[in-house]
Image 1: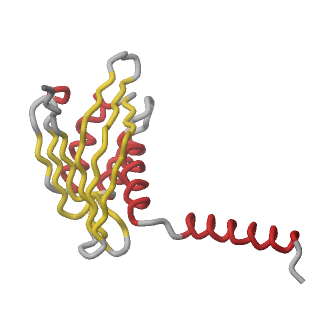
Image 2 (image 1 turned 90 degrees about the vertical axis):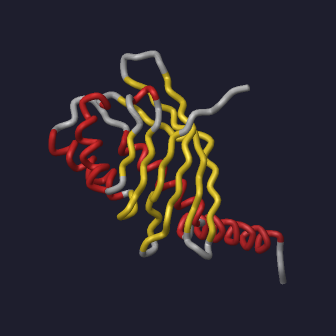
Amino acid sequence: MVTKKNIVVIVLLAALAGVLWWFLFPSDARQVRSQLKETAKLVSVPTGESLLARATRANNVAGNFSPAPELILDRSEIGRPRLITSREEIRQYFLGAHSQLVGTRVELLDITVAVDTKTETAHAELTAKVTHAGQSEVWAWPVRVEAVKVEGEWLVSRVETFEVIER
């Protein structure tokens, strides 16, 4: 005999199973979004970081990119346009710019992700909010990102900053 209590227990178990499924088996779009947020955390540089921690951070940043990445950094706030085309260049750029990045915090806002499961690629558009400790200026950069799935892991393959033209 089915009682109200049994129905409530079944509904609760089904809800728990759904939540567990959602956490244990995230969608590709959720995985890409998570990878992008993790990269933003790594690019954010706290004050007082040791040389070893800085090198580890640079390696981790580079490790979030595909073996042949393409970064197109074309923002007046960071100087001349840059094209970076390897993990080693990412590592070197990050280490070289580290002194200027101390106290920098990067947040990713309004992330939209479209995944093509046939080609195992993803395209994302977002806004990178960049703040510096002790400065009131906030930079908001529109960014396009492409990612590829390599051996089951989503890696960033292309990043492009761009200017928004206002009418």
